[in-house]
Length: 109
Figure 1 (cartoon, rainbow, N blue to C red):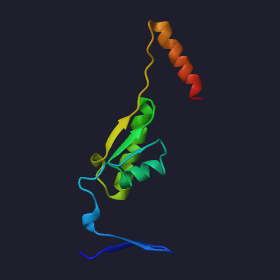
Figure 2 (cartoon, helix red, strand yellow):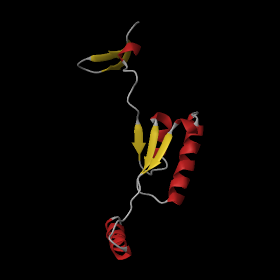
Figure 3 (tube, rainbow, N blue to C red):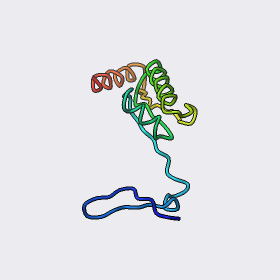
Figure 4 (tube, rainbow, N blue to C red):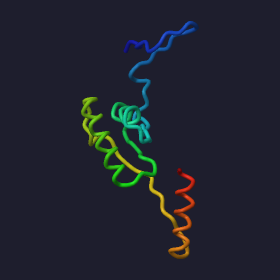
């Protein structure tokens, strides 16, 4: 197989052959909320997308946006795994849980 040139610099060049790509490859995950760059990059390159600490309504909105970017990029939306980080507040009682939520809410503003 002939090497394929993937870059030329002032000091050296770089080439690759199809056999140099590890199989199976490491899955690519992209995380974030950005609707223009992040979701488009996920639609173009990722095996999975992770949304950090968002509520269910926002996650649904962002997931629909990812689906739209997949269609723009000519990719099947179901080919990307979708996850979300979630937070929960643990306390010995309801007051303790409420204190944890209040502290987290103040720190994320």
